[in-house]
Image 1: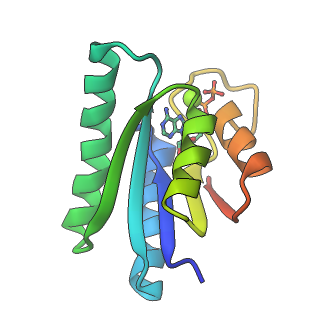
Image 2 (image 1 turned 45 degrees about the vertical axis):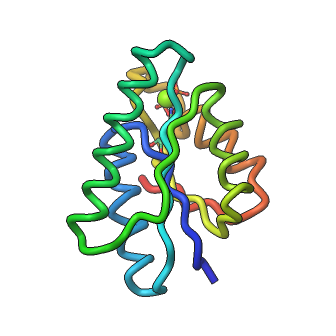
Length: 128
Ligand code: ATP
Ligand code: MG
C-alpha cells in the first residue's frame, strides 16, 4: 500500500510540510515519489514560476536521500490537474497541505485540498 505517492506542491508552508510527510512515508514504505505543481495560467511566466516551485520540492526530496520518480508542471485548474496526474501515474496516495498560498483565512481547508479530497479515488493525506 502507498507505493506511489503524489505530493501536490505550491511552495506554501503547508505544502512544505506535506513534502516532509510524504518523504517520511516513502522511506518507511519504500514508495515512489511524484511531484506536481500547477501554474495558475498558461503564460510562459506562470509556467516558469511553477517550474521553479516544483524544482524546490524535488530538491527537498533529493536532499532527503530519495529519488523523485517524476516532476510534473501543468497549467489549468489545480484540483483537476492534480487528479488527472494522479490517475496517469496510478498514485495510490495523494499528499497535500490543508492550506496553500492564499491569505484568506476563512476556511479550514483550501479549495484545492477540499476538491481533491472529495473527488480523488485514492486516499488523500491532508497535512496541517
Ligand atoms: P485557496 O487557494 O482555496 O484560496 P489555499 O491556497 O489556502 O486556499 P489550497 O490552494 O487548497 O489552499 O492549498 C492546499 C494544498 O493544495 C497546498 O498545500 C498544496 O498541497 C495543494 N495545492 C494548492 N495549489 C496548488 C497548485 N497550484 N499546485 C500544486 N498543488 C497545489
Ligand atoms: Mg491556493
